[in-house]
Image 1 (cartoon, rainbow, N blue to C red):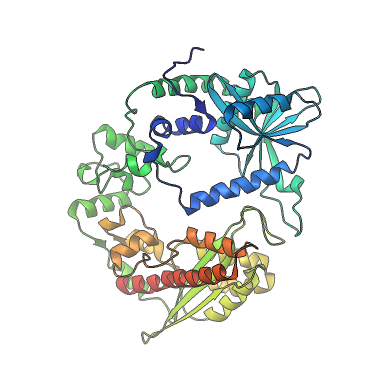
Image 2: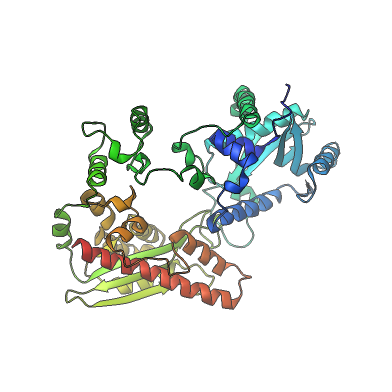
Amino acid sequence: MNVPLASPGLSKSRFMAGMQCHKRLYFETFRPELAEPADESGEATFDVGHAVGALARNRYPHGTLIGEELNWVDAERVTRTTLRNPAIPAVFEGALSFESVRIRADVLTRTRDGRFDLIEVKSTLNVKPEHEWDLAIQHHVLTGAGLPTRWARLMHLNRDYVYPGGDYDLKRLFTFTNLTQMVLKRAGEVMAALKEMRKVLAAKPAPSISVGAQCNTPYACSFYDHCHKDEPDHSIEQLPRLRMRLREQLTSMGVFEIVKVPEDFDGLSSLQARVVEAVRTDTRYHDPAISRKLRKLKFPLHFLDFETFSPALPLYSGTRPYQVIPFQWSDHILNANGAVTHREFLHSDRSDPRRAFADQLLDALGSKGSIVVYGAFESTRLRELGEHYSDLAPALAGARKRIIDLLPLIRDHVYDPDFHGSFSLKSVLPALVPDLGYDDLDITNGGLASLAYAEMQAPDTPPERISHIRAALFAYCKRDTEALVELFRVLR
């Protein structure tokens, strides 16, 4: 293949970017400064992948790691030398290239007949479509580079592994999915995709591609803000549950703003039609039925919120990879006379927090009064705790029966244009209770709370840092239930 001289080289990461969107590929190659810097969540995801990858290498003792500090020329030279040495059973982060496409293979293991198995390590529980492309581009390069391969396999975390404590059983912690046949079927598609990507990189300027579902599929694009900077305040992308067919219908009519949806357009759901009407008239929709429903709640009202984390590598015996572990709750209690009290819990050490969490929660909730939450999250966690602690199951089931979820009530009865299509608490609260927000807090969302608690659990976190995190977690979780109280008052 004749690769245009003007076309920069490709890598696996650039190929994957191009499979998502050619504009993303172009920007990552020529305008990386336009990307949003990785946030704490993105950095944490990277760290988890790195830790899982390092652990996976322990399944192959006596393997050789090709150092990341090497420049590409040296890395590929060392890789080829290592692969030729039959005494080395596995190569980690092997660097190879073919027709200006570079890859680093997580694991290459030598087979008895002199071939190699390609193994891609992922810190996921499932095989995803993008994993097939990941292996397919690597297989393309390995084959082109003259490395005989037998299998292309995905090595990922095993959802059925129950951690017994102590060292991980790596043979059970990880599981394999053989994707060789799928990879071979994609060989022609890989070559066609590479041809198109080279055309994109050889052309000027950036390709003209409208924003759409690809902006968040399979990953949130780091250029999202740049590509959406000129998006109207109420784009059709804010229509709840916007499916591809409806998007295509509207854009084919030249409709990109909610206010321009024709009044006689009949392709909307009742919820979408309500959103369109609220935006078109710049008026909040408020069905009085929600007030009548909320007046039926029984005092004392418990406004409840949980914080959880889901470690990829289980920390507590009896838990699985990515199992959701509740570690904190906040309960604001509104009495019939208007008086409000507050109780809270945050696990204080590195032991499994679930038993203390459940015991103290049940004591705070008592047996009377409605429990107000936002979303199904808390109910699901109570069910899981009941499944784990059989002696607490009846009391936890009783608490679940008292739950009233504000989310579907608001979705069915309220819409403000300032929701911008989202019914998350972080979107609803500023519109309905503008004086109460999160900007003054160190922790501003549940994802950051999870990361903070994970940092508390790390054995090398200094005491002063732990103290700071505890204070920040208390402030954040308390604000969540304060928000529920004020939201209830506005709606009622």
